[in-house]
Image (cartoon, rainbow, N blue to C red; front, side):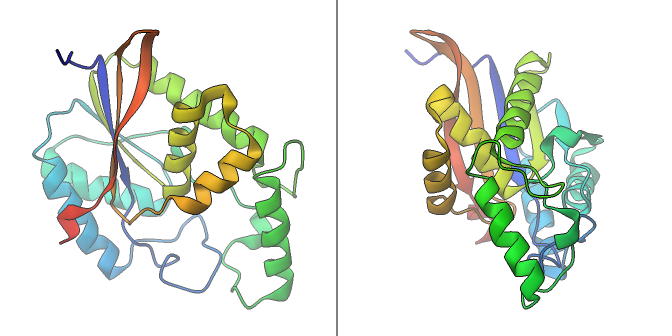
Length: 216
């Protein structure tokens, strides 16, 4: 017999941003594109049919604008948390075109650090700090009193949380890199995790990944 989960978290990736649609290393303040605003409107309509208590969002512009569109339809005002920002790039990459050779070299070096423990590139996150933040985000959600939450965040970070939930302490840098390269995500895709009783105790489980049927 199926038991009702202790908690349900609906992750929403933000709508397409100007940075997503451009050949640049996206800046923190990249806003939604015209398409992104349309996508946000569609996921807002879908989320309005869900029963949830709290709306949480990354404070980065593209996520904040998506959350604001959801708020207009649902009446739930967003609560912003730095825990749910996207992987943090070196500041020197922000807004640089992909054609910039220096920026491209920095990107390659930084990407390596995402799968290499203890390797740090300028002020960007690396494997250790990213996984630590994902753990903090997971614990933050587990300890919230609400039973149903919507969280507007970012594609790479959603995959990081899912990787941690599925593999736990068995998440090696190699497995993390492979998972990130094999799991695709659409702007405003809906990913759902549950916190429920298992034979080994209460645990997080992946229920739905990257459902973007609302986009047609």
